[in-house]
Length: 227
Image (cartoon, rainbow, N blue to C red; front, side, top):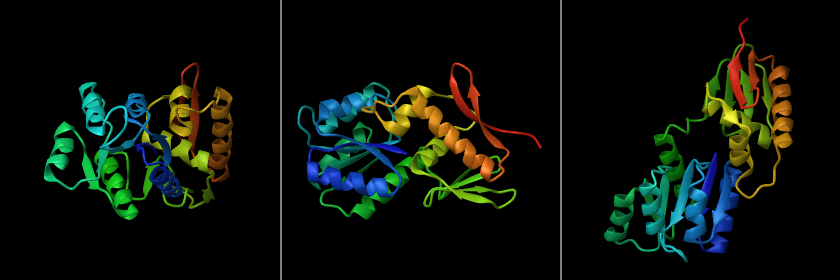
């Protein structure tokens, strides 16, 4: 899953970025409201952590503009003040949750899981498609028919998670690049094809009847083969 963190405290942002990466999230960071707003309009994020006090444009204005533009990505607001008025302002503007600084990192992780779960983007620990079961916490892939398993690399895991969370949908190469490498990446189309190839090998290794199908000129989707 990919998160956007709009936070101008560089040290805090770096600590949180590494923490979320340890939990198998990809994180992009914006240090001011203007750039954060623009990144939030790309539609590639599963959730956004938004500080209330930011340079260029404060977090409340950023959130207001997103919702006015019909961007409904789940947003968790961070505020340095605990006054009820600040919390109500964020919630009334469309925030899904809020957290007052200072906070425990474990609580932030838990709250992000909650707001993504509300959007149907986060399962308890596993997601399934066909004979596949993907364990989120360990990046292990299981064949439920024969109980074979294989460890996925980071990008293989992210690719298969993306495909499994968008079952029966064709994902374009641009969508895959945005989700796996982010807005600033110079990844080319052959990067996608390389990791598609790696992941297909893992599926073959566990003798899965699920395949990654290439839809000519469009992108990729998961498909379960018969027999």
